[in-house]
Amino acid sequence: MRRIKEDHLTKNLISDLADHIDDVIGDKAISLNTRGTEGTLAYEEWNSCDHCGHAGESQSEIQHDMDCPVGWFQDLVDDVRNPKPKETK
Image 1 (cartoon, rainbow, N blue to C red):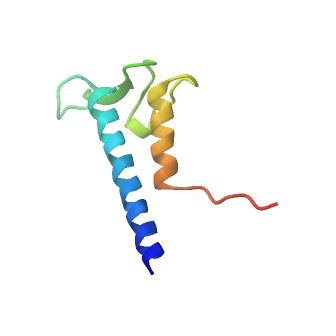
Image 2 (tube, rainbow, N blue to C red; image 1 turned 90 degrees about the horizontal axis):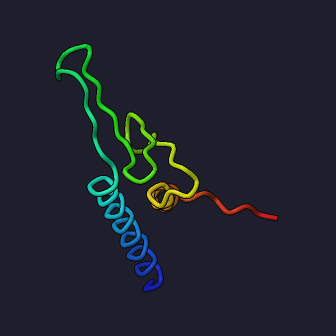
C-alpha cells in the first residue's frame, strides 16, 4: 500500500515539475508577438523562440532547431505529460 502512495506522489511531483518548466519556458524563452490592430482582420498573434527564432501560432507548434535547449525542455515536458508505452521485444 505504501508503494502505491509513493508512486502516486512521485507522478504528481513530476507532473508539477513539468508544469513549472513549461511555465518558465513560456515566461522566459518564448515571446508573444503581435501585428495590426486587435479586433480587426489584419491582427495577428504568434509565438517565437528567443533561442532559435522559430515561430508558431502556439508554443507547442514551434518547430525548434535540433540543438535548441528550449525545444529539448518542451519535448521533455511533453514526454512527462504523455509518456509513450515501452516497446516490447
